Length: 331
Image (cartoon, rainbow, N blue to C red; front, side, top):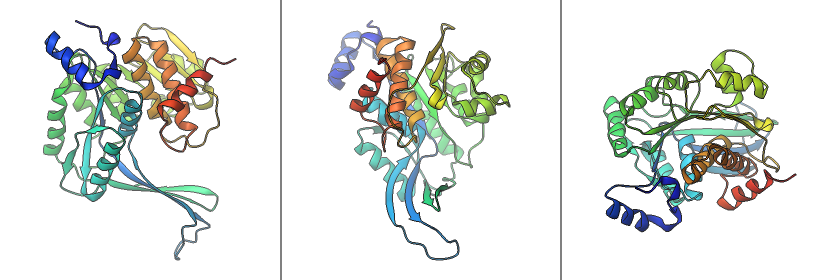
C-alpha cells in the first residue's frame, strides 16, 4: 500500500480513484472540517455613531462568511488538499454561506436545520473602535446532531476530522466530546481548535493536534502565560499528540508527537487583518504534514499560511502563502 506521504495530490480525483481500484482501498488522507456555528459576517464603517438615532454607513461595507472550520477548508483547498466541510445551515443565511463556500472551491455536506437562522455577526467600525454584535445561531435538535454524526461515518483510518470554533447555544458543552467518543479507536486523527470546556473535554481522547493561542492557553490554566518557556511547560501538561501554540508577534511553539519542541518566528509582512490567521495556521500545518509527514515542515507551512492571511484582507491564496514561506528562511 502506498504511504500517504507519497501521493501526488495535484493529479486530482481521477488519480485517487484509480489508486483505489488497483489497491482495493483508498490510499490518501481525507480531511473533514466541522463548523457547528457558521455565520454571515457583515462589516460596516460608519464614522461616528450616536445610539438611539439613525446612522449612515460611510464606507467599508463587506458581506462575507465566517466560521473557523470553513476557513480551514478554504485554505486547505487553496493548498491542493482535498477536504469536505460539514456543519449546520439554517434558513436563507445558511444557504448563502454554503453557496459562497462552494464558489470558493470547497466541497460541502451541510445538514439543513429547521429552526432558526445561521447567525449574522455585525462588525461595526465607528467612533474609533470596532464593536461586534454576534448572533446566537439556530436551534440544533438531537436528531440533527445525529445526522451530522452519521455523515462523518465516511471517515476512515488515517483521515482527519477538524473540530473548530464555537457551538450554538442550543447544543451541550460536551458536543465535541460526543463526536470524539463516537469515533475514538478507529485510527481517525482529530484536530481541535477551540477554547475552554470544548477543548478541555476533548483532551481525554488525545487528539492529533490542538491549537490554542497564548490567550486561550492562559485561560485554560488560569494564569497569565507570556513566554515560550511558560507555554512549553503548559503544553507538556496537555494530552494531545501535537500541541501548537500561536503567540502572535512572538511566533509559535510546537510540542510534537515525538516530544520535541520547535520554536518558530513569524513570516515577514505587514499585518492588515488577523481574522482567520489561526485557522489558516491549522490548514497549513495539516497540508504540510499530509504531504511530508514531517512536523517541522508542517509548522513552517502553518506559520506561513497564518502570516499570509494576516497580511491580507481575506484568507490567503496559495501564492501569498508561498511568498510568506520564503520569508521564514530569510536572514
